[in-house]
Length: 411
Ligand SMILES: *Cc1c(COP(=O)(O)O)cnc(C)c1O
Image 1 (cartoon, protein in one colour):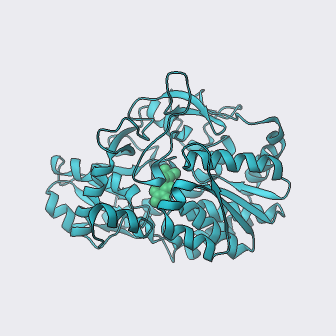
Image 2 (spheres, rainbow, N blue to C red):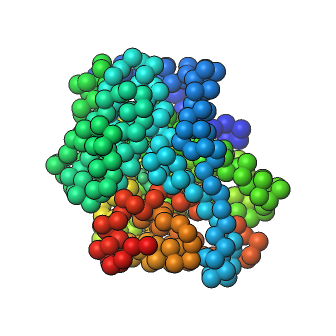
């Protein structure tokens, strides 16, 4: 399985929508074939349309954030750990506090072009719902957000934000009442409402076109980072490691996209999944803790499942990572040997939160704290010439209640 150079990874699929011959595809009900076909044609046309790109660039580079989101050296943390240099791409500075704003803007722009008035989506940590509520409000669309009941209870600040922006939260009581069920329900809803409603998926998951639209959107992160690295270092350093937490995988794809053609030795990719509570059998780490290929939400990918092939319940302190599947893009990167994946526990993430906030003026949410945990672990063993870049992709404001419970205090 070989990656092609000079072609975006999102476009490296075969005519049936599979990456590497087996990941992704279109496992969809008959009734969705037409709306998904129409969306595919529209998106492929618009991504080559100058006006559409101009509008996108305006939103991505002026509205999401004035200019690129910050790329900063974490001087104190670097000194404390005494090894590799630690840098952060502070994507949490984007409007709304996380990378999902990119996909939300794209979804709202597509919804408008199709003349649809309703925009629906799933959410886990609540960030995706919040971003869709922000984008929907800006574009005058009615937004419905499907969210597991368990997540509604644990991510109150984001739910408040969604309601304040006029979005409706549809609680999902089925299954584990988390993201996996929210995605199933929103897809079910879309089957019967696709004539008036556009579906935006919150990560690089689901059937082929949704993976592409989301990856195309978050890739903005690495377009910015590429320029910022050159500005900072004058050239591309010899040894860089790009660390990103992986739930569905949209922020990690976004961070890596522009660097995939570089050698692994120069730009190494480490994806960090959620191992769940220490000693728990449940986890949300299909790439690193052993999972089989299965079909979930319209695509073939590694997912956590039992012996009979039923999707397993997952467990993680971070709602954003609490998902049994993962993007086919990451399955492909793993099988091609271009990226590797590890898992960190709830406790590791909490410990990392304490360390990062002790040394730096940064407040990463529990999802990127999984990536910081890995950076903190490996940095002391690496040379000072090695550059570790962590995508600090979310702000901890949404985790306020959990952090107070588990750490007894907040920064
Ligand atoms: C949704 C979310 C994630 C996980 O989703 P990806 O598609 O893997 O990026 C990670 N971090 C934050 C802050 C999120 O909101």
